[in-house]
Length: 176
Image 1 (cartoon, rainbow, N blue to C red):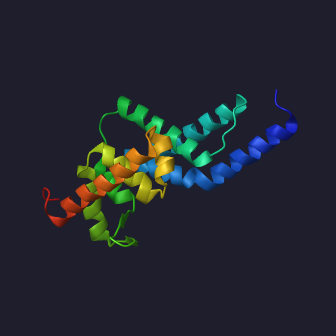
Image 2: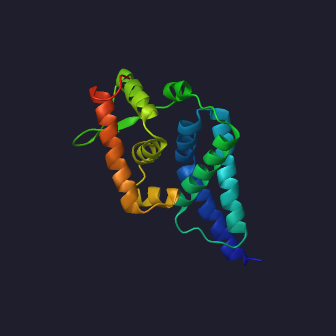
Image 3: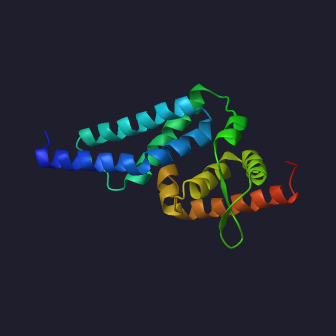
């Protein structure tokens, strides 16, 4: 059994992580499954698993990658159980940011819809890293931890995904 001071410290760290990351984890999950009710359940399950991990005496040094990786695994489990995903619901429920050549800028509703349609056409490999990078503002190092890949592989996927998205949006790819 943990001493009271360690248990209190763990509880404070958990509550701080919840306050800081729950909204981001929710946005990440809902952008992938497009079901707000299920997303809330998966956020709850993400934090329940984090708490259970801590209750076993384990320590979480970096909460954000741990929580997003846990959420990612829950999403994969959900996809395995339920094969259909509504991209239209994602389009209606979530906002999106796209990177410009020099900076990240917000886009109009019509542009955002077009970008989401382009992202929906991307392979999951690119879609996942672009969503984590530009929607959740995760650095490649954290994305690599979440997906179990090297940071270099993640950086290459971000670069290639952006190239493919630009091609789609410029009309060099299939019409959106």
